[in-house]
Length: 97
Image 1 (cartoon, rainbow, N blue to C red):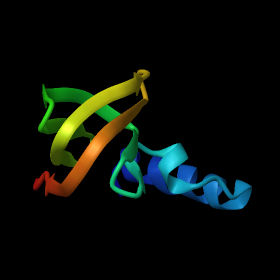
Image 2: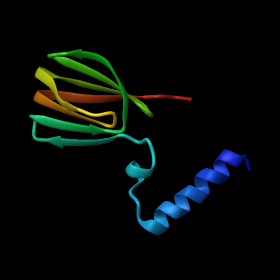
Image 3: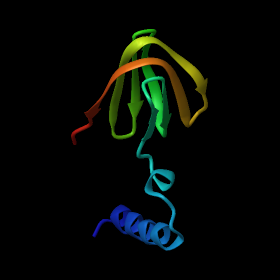
Image 4: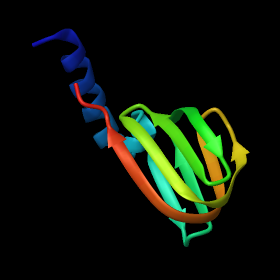
């Protein structure tokens, strides 16, 4: 078995033992949508496009597209984005290996 797979399996066992959520211990994005007005994106890589009607975000597992009106990046850290505005649709383009 490859070394990386063994390391991931051991790390997964430790996370389960300590009851650490998967999105905290990995790079899987977590999306929290509050109504049609706010959206919190955690574990993102970069912002690919940003306009007031369209935001495109790169994550570790794909590309997130947010469509709407008056969209703003209200708060931004290296790990989290808070998007506000009138969110109409959200879609995800997965990365295939």
